Amino acid sequence: MPPEIVTFGCRLNTYESEVMREHARTAGLENAIVFNTCAVTAEAERQARQAIRRARREHPDATIIVTGCAVQIDPAGFAAMPEVDRVLGNEEKLDARSFLADAAPVLVNDIMSVRETAPHLVEGLEGRARAFVQVQQGCDHRCTFCIIPYGRGNSRSVAIGRIAQQVRTLVETGYNEVVLTGVDITSYGPDLPGSPTLGQMVRRVLAAVPELPRLRLSSLDPVEIDDDLWRLIAEEPRLMPHLHLSIQAGDDMVLKRMKRRHLRADAIACCARARDLRPDVTFGADLIAGFPTETDAMFENSLALVAECDLTWLHVFPYSARKGTPAARMPQVPGDLRRARAARLRDAGDAAVSRFLATRVGGTAQVLVERGRQGHTEQFAMVELDREVPPGSLVTADLTGSDGTRLQARIAA
Image (cartoon, rainbow, N blue to C red; front, top):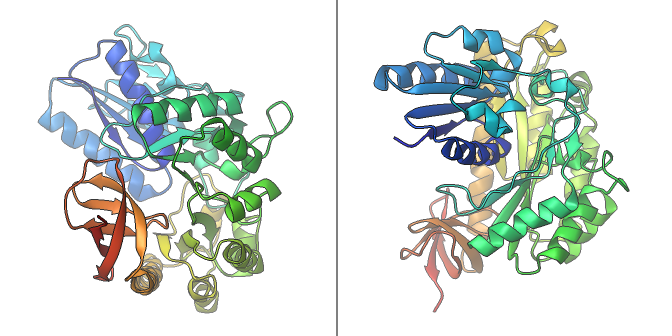
């Protein structure tokens, strides 16, 4: 069978899985399953191990290769799994030589020694209507809850010309929407000649590929949006009115203990400025429930921030202690209380989605069709269309109703 790639975690992993798919094909690797793991929570790591064991039971003769952030952080632990044949670090998984038959069973470098991000051109992402493009890798910050810098290394950026080349290739292949992704994309540029900012890079990519209809950005730090990016938010219709913000909490003491770069007021100011510049903008946000030392009052501040910033698309995580991080040594909130707080945040998010969708009924939207009759609007609202359209198509649709989780729409004549 052709190599199967099983991806956990973020959009960056999705892009890197496509690079690995091509490397595995080129190497003639058959009857192989490659697991691209995530380490953001203990649950993500548990799910990966469970999937690896299940794959071995179901495919006893397959070659099982594991890689990704969980592997980079604990290579010995994954190498010790009897189900695993080969272990690759986050740098090695992007090297075609790692997939050759004579490659060593364990290839994991010190990720902190990596100084460059090797650009890889892909012609598409299997089974996906929108394409992800890596613009940055790693993180120089050390939030107290986060293990990811130890899996990804320090921040390093992809040259603007290579990004534009990748975007152009994807557009020529037929993609109508591209998402620029990385670990900490607002840190883009200081390691490149001339130290371009994220906004300068986006402006130049859009100018270099005028035929690209839609561009999105992955998670943004609310206090690191540069002046060029603010101008693009205000003036560039091809930059979608949907900003996903790495907020994490809405209480200043929690934010300080997290070692975040912003305070509550900064998140509120960021959303207010974006809405002033682009009234149709919607916000997504990452939020952690039950961070160590979080009291009921501190949590209520985070819950209230959902309404104060008018956040819509929430990614909520109960806090997960990661060995080796400062937060893991802080006084912990009981697990059942973390889960209960996460449920309240998710309920607030569900209510926000329902309210937002109700405001869109009766209007029109450009929908990127992803499968059959489903797609997303410019503001990332899910839509159910009245008929099937080829995946990847951009259609104008009249928004006729909402069930509280998605819009119903009729494709305009």
